[in-house]
Image (cartoon, rainbow, N blue to C red; front, side):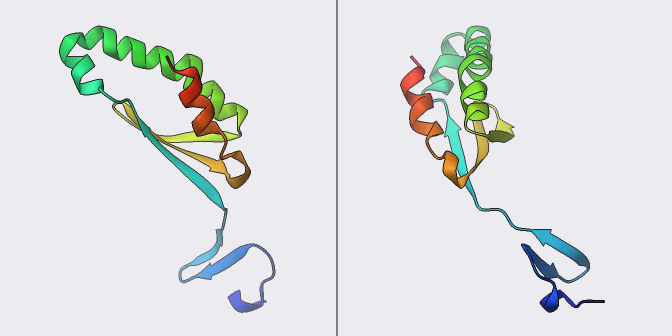
Length: 97
């Protein structure tokens, strides 16, 4: 049996765990500028518009760049991309009116 130091490949030994897979990713943190103001003016309309933008523009762009949303927080989100997919943020900014 190999010890953690002897095991080749992409994994790192951690006490009490056999392997930890390492990945190099870029994290995108985004939120809607002025969303609190929009909620104050029209709560139902602001939430509907946010869902529409996320479903029609943001999620498809992230998927096109092989990314995934891993946390939603109100009007904010965190997404991860393989390092080669860093182009998504400028693309999304240019498509959102």
